[in-house]
Length: 288
Image (cartoon, rainbow, N blue to C red; front, side, top):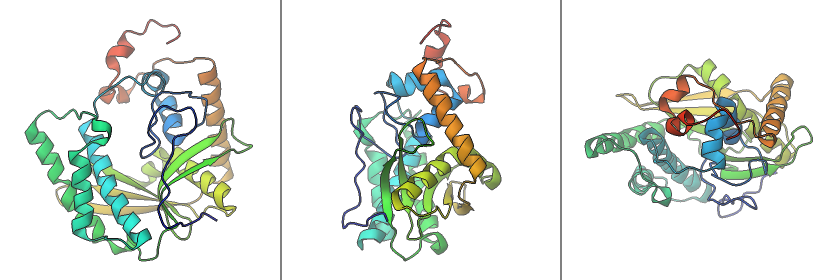
């Protein structure tokens, strides 16, 4: 079973990496064949050339405001769950203070691309009511101590071409993996379950390997930053065999593509918010 030591597990970069291991495994640079993760796999499948710029070359880019906001909200949620685990201060005041600290001091002092101070302050103000809404939703804030918080797991599975790495926001006592999403509008839950299948399958595989127990499934918790904030929880069953086979095939596609330097652009709607459009436009059609 996953151990529950007094201090929470501290995520550690795998050997050979060149960066800190923050939420959802966003190591930049290093050997892309050292391991696979949900973040790496989804990035590669979305656009191989963006993956190359972002994950392999580690081109420096400022944080987008929405991503920065999501990370700061996550810091508040992380404080709350660690306090649940360690019998600490999980008061509204403490949770909001953790959010504000993370918002005001980005990790590694990374710049955030706010358009103005007014935009920054407007976005910052949305975090407090959003976290209050979460704290008032008791059914997704159970009293029972979790099994782990920000749990870093690594597994070598015969079905996968590469070692698997992941960091899970929260693992409840029944081994349900919980992942938080900060969104701007009410989500289509069936669509979201499909969009996050790679991530949720990753979590189920890691938990099963670590515990020797079948995964009970996963839970997506959406914090919706509408005018009146709301929190929506959606339970997703453990992946079936078709999903597991599909996942293994996608990992194989990643491993083969990276090994052969198959980095090329995949134009689509995601280009509208991609930070590497200038580098992409300079691509000459050969190996990146």
